[in-house]
Image (tube, rainbow, N blue to C red; front, side, top):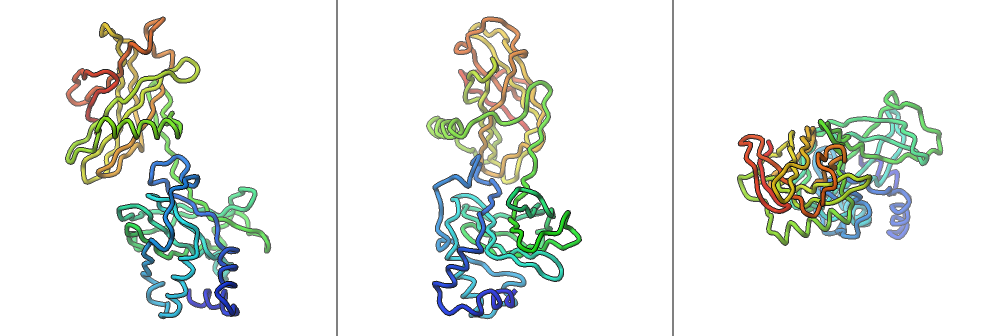
Length: 327
């Protein structure tokens, strides 16, 4: 890659001119969503690039001499800050080659743990949002990106992989194709129903109630029961994974009872791809549709949500808070 850097900056006479070029080439960072924030790009909680360690491995480490490596470090440190606790991919240069369209990036990990990739689905879009090329890059040989560090990475979209070849002056932008969170449920919609404000509120509530991740245990708590739109109800659940491996929750049975203990509603959510990373937690909102409520004229404030243990089938107690194990 050194020839690209040389051709790009070879004629520059000052660092100020280089900074101008960096500002002109750098694109908006795309985030992988590992922080749990709904719109991480809108977060003001950011880390300066100088606080991240730049690691040069593979072809970058072998082909760049000392001066080129120092120059790449300069480019890295001139980039915008990255969202804290997120992993972002920021393109700092792109060009057409004989083989295809080459994008040079930094993968920046502003979190507290290493991140390893299996496949990285990326696409190239124009200013109108039209997708010109899609490709899933094999990242096994790339290795992990250490905590609070960056790694240079190049992505080549070959011309035969394009749906339509770009015009000579057409700008292309890198886009991360996040896997669709398709989940199935026997009764209600599976999508997360929490707003960003609600998510922050329940994160604080979990901290105040000391609902921490317990090493070696997987727990599921009903944090709240509240009204939703169109006469529906919403149950806010806290998933806690204290294991050293990622856990996928495939079945969440939710039961709602009134003050006399009579059953008001029962909804069983069959889920796919709802996973909680090792030693971490996840807050999720489940929508209870009005047709699932068996009793009429129910006072929601007098009801309690329970999440039963699918293994032991125990009835769990507690006002707006109950626990169970879902594997």
